[in-house]
Image (cartoon, rainbow, N blue to C red; front, side, top):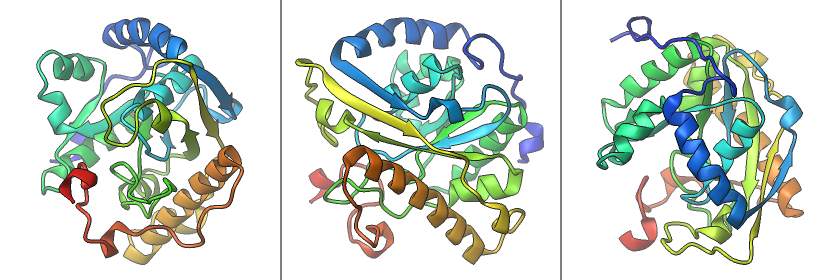
Length: 257
């Protein structure tokens, strides 16, 4: 299958990219988030108001997609995400998030390439695509970003679409990694910061594996720098590498142990 054969309508509405399901979901979830979260949002001026773009962020908690989307939505863009297929199989919820434009992906399988082609089509239509480059919650014991999968770099180098780094801190207090209990009160400060476009010019158009790895590292370095700002401390010099670990690549690694 080719991305050219997958069609998505151009984004419309306000915020750009919204539709009936997105509006209903936002109408329900935004007031709830406002009750349990104190918003600390920075760098929204970098978010492009129109046109295809990729926004990337670190992944700490199941709450991340909601608080990150809240940041993007309130600043004018309704993003599209690639999400694990299991979520889309949940009755009603799966149908609803798919209706909101989100895209199921079979992670760690040969069919994952279909998600990549859907992402290309989404960008060709002019949407904002949200990506968690790590592909799962960080395995770093101190919750720093780990070395990422190469999908987002491959996508950016192939399409030429700009990549904007973001970082988040605080969702892991509301819902701990792989936790189920939600901290409701007192409200927790959740910070989201966006930075300037990542400079990938030296690797544009390349499909060389070394270039793709280098571009991936450049993207994750920018995310890490932003997280250092939010945390007020320095990250380790070397990132946790899941490829060199015996931890499972996806899923609840704490339960697996």
